[in-house]
Image (tube, rainbow, N blue to C red; front, side, top):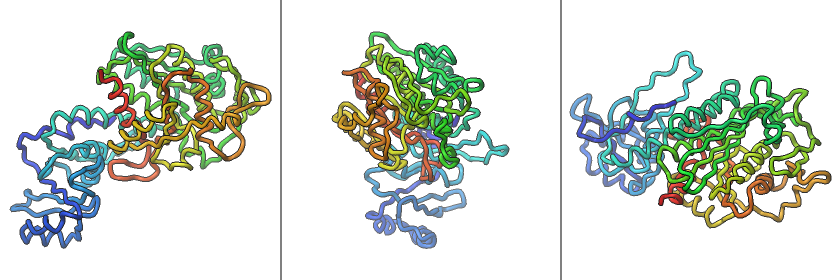
Length: 463
């Protein structure tokens, strides 16, 4: 786990290198205000105030240097405009020459994220410390950065070390920290109460037994908020086996579980006035003589039956049982996170998770909040015109539709059947992975849609 707590400090006048932020519109005026030595250094480094560009500025002695960095707009800083500096500057203390960092404090932290668990010789990392007068912002920024780091750590960990038992251990750490109640239903005990979770995970039960991990926290008098996460710790595709290229990233298929663990941590640490019910449906979708098969008909906790048309559409099965159980306690709001469909990536790419909701106005509100904090989501229609695609000839429904159309929508429609009517519900089909590095956002496991929903939950239950 990355410790960011020392990387942003209150500014009490400590020695520090200055960071000048300049945009294209103000670059000429900024240059005119500098002495000839600084102007010469800027020209020599071919600095033009482009985004993420930087130049080192000479001072009166070797230790008295500063830096200038290009940003899109000095009047509206993004979360990421300082992240490249946090990744590349020499270790030491820094402060902005003018103005406040605001949201850019977040990228200063996440730009210094490292995942070194499996390196025999971890790279030496000298911390870059930013001094700020925005002392009141520090706790909230630290909490969000640490939540994002938790998601990254869990998703980056290989499946052998992040099986269902390891997810349970992470939940127990969280429960102990915040004095929450824990309940785990595992192995064959799942067969009666959560038959779809049992069916998906039974092929790996000897080593990585499936389980439903539950945590409850908060005053029972407060509104009930349920967080449900897909915890498929590795997805071979089952008997509908994936090609090797399709399996390469399947350690990340528990990314939904990582998101709800991180969001639950934020909620409990803040003391939000909710009765929190966190559920993680954890299983490995493996292959053995005990694996569930195409053509099988599974019972569900709800009582409906599901014909298996694709064993590689297993995430919606484990979520179905967990969502129905969450709904049994009459929640005010249900939020689920899942690395559910490739169709969502085809539609919106890796960076933009689709958001499904029964309330499009609320979905639009979340999208606005996400845009404001550089954590975008895109509202997608829960289009019931496609319900017929889920019909089965022999059971109440199929788990996967035939044909290439509307894969993300029909997966969401399947989940909708397991959320009780009249309950507010958001489904986030997140990728939980960044295929290429960007400033503040390294390649690998990633929290996508976490901060947006955190802001929505804070606003909804602020009173």
